[in-house]
Length: 212
Image (cartoon, rainbow, N blue to C red; front, top):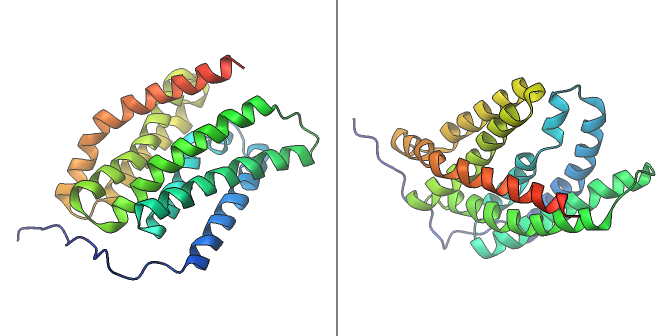
């Protein structure tokens, strides 16, 4: 039997109720930042680094983008989620009287805009079901996990085990997000492009932090 891709989602189909999207943004954003700060203190190394992860904060943007479905709404919701993640994370640190540098917060807010725009759109593309867009969206979110896992395993040998597991999780996510075996193969193939681009992004982020 020849496997065919499902028809694209009808763009005229009802959008999620605005209040449901708002609740998800608030809960995932505000809760995720606090959860990140808490998990960093309770997880043992090297697994504590999973709570100090760029890829982990890209996942909520993809989630709300998929829920929003429309690219414009998806970007707005994803950027708001990223801002709440940053704000609640540093608020949790301030409550503990930990030092917080405004320049560092600013870098993460800029990163939140970029992550929200890219991964919110990726989530919307994947949800709509259009084959090219859905394939690219799945490759972006799974690729960021594979990239960070490989980066951690290579750049920080003591994080090797957790890095390998994160990379494998990204590959598994690529398979789960694919709707057909052909699409899954295409998503995995696109990782060849996504992973190096993500690697470059990590170095740019590190450079920004080194400059402040």
